Amino acid sequence: MEKRSLQISMARARHKIVVISERCKECGICITVCPVKILDKSSLRNSRGFRYPVASDENRCIGCRLCEYSCPDLAIYIL
Amino acid sequence: MAVAVEHPLDKYVRTEKLPTLWCPGCTIGIVMTSLLRAIDQRIREGLLRRDQITFVGGIGCSARIAMYVRFDSVRTAHGRTIPLATAIKILRPEHKVIVVGGDGDICAIGGNHLLHALRRNMDLMIIIVNNMIYGMTGGQVSPTTPLKLYTTTTPYGNPEKPLNIIRLACSLGANFVARGSATHPHILQQIFYKALGKRGLALIEVLSSCPEIFGRHIGITDPVKSFMTLRDKIKVKNNPSLDESEYDWEKGFVIGVYLDKDDPGYIDNLSLLYKSLRGF
Ligand SMILES: Cc1ncc(C[n+]2csc(CCOP(=O)(O)OP(=O)(O)O)c2C)c(N)n1
Ligand code: SF4
Ligand code: SF4
Image (tube, chains in turn red, blue):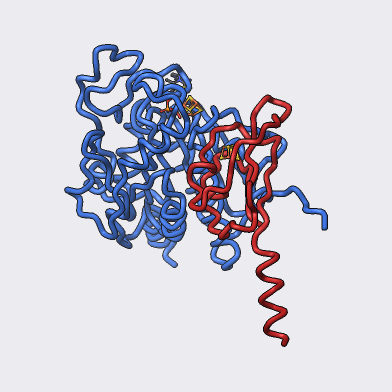
């Protein structure tokens, strides 16, 4: 029983993609390196006019952190 | 639950200076974050003290890493990082002294200093961010611009044979010589991690993409295309031989650790000398 509830909570929680939108420069590198292709350019812009990334389906994130490691501007990370 | 907007590396970065001056998609930022992760790893393992790290940077886009890291850091004239870093290391031998700069800064104007630091096996970590061009000043040819490529000062193609930094460093007696690429941040972090633990000279050449200036000349200004063009040219090897360090834009670049030995560094020799003079 205990084991089962643990599995369920893990399936729900998975990984949280955090974008610090004001730091983004819209280079698109994170979007390209994501192996499950869940990142996309937002239709919104930050105060400098850059369209920062948004996740289309956060539940599919596998937590590889490739976006976090490949962002030159410390603008995205996985929690 | 509210999520605190704080990047895991923020504790090592002068966040008040963000965003950096680097152009969108410039991979110098990836070199910096990979280095900070390696430093963080060593600090967490108790192998390095935060208050015993000093950065030395010169002039150029790459050298600005020294401005953004939240450690003791100093910036000096273009090309003169190594002599300043040498002085700091002699006065503060317990410090890990890290030199960061571009191919122009360290290999062109600072080339002579590089030769002598290598010859001395000077106890420094030297990171050369090689974007194959003078980025900050508008794209002049550098010693590492590959043959035939266009730059502002080689409008008909570069007629010069480029410098193979790896061969130079291996031939002159550095303890640790490696090539990494900003397009492979995990491998880069591992290389930095190893280099941070070395005595003597550790030299790391990091290939980096400059979409704004280098890209403009080779016709690839899109940050993603620029990143992927470099990434496609990288081959990863575990223990590459010196011949595999060949530096050729067409054939691509092998990254990995080319040399890893443990000879006494300059500081060891200096303390032996002091001991013999003092007699204890
Ligand atoms: C003594 C001196 N000479 C020339 C310059 C002009 N200058 C500034 S940065 C630079 C070269 C930049 O190229 P690199 O070191 O490869 O760094 P990058 O900007 O490509 O990262 C030059 C020639 C200077 N600042 N000082
Ligand atoms: S890699 Fe960083 S700067 Fe580039 S688009 Fe993604 S979040 Fe923005
Ligand atoms: S000019 Fe090139 S090296 Fe300098 S910040 Fe821009 S992309 Fe980076």
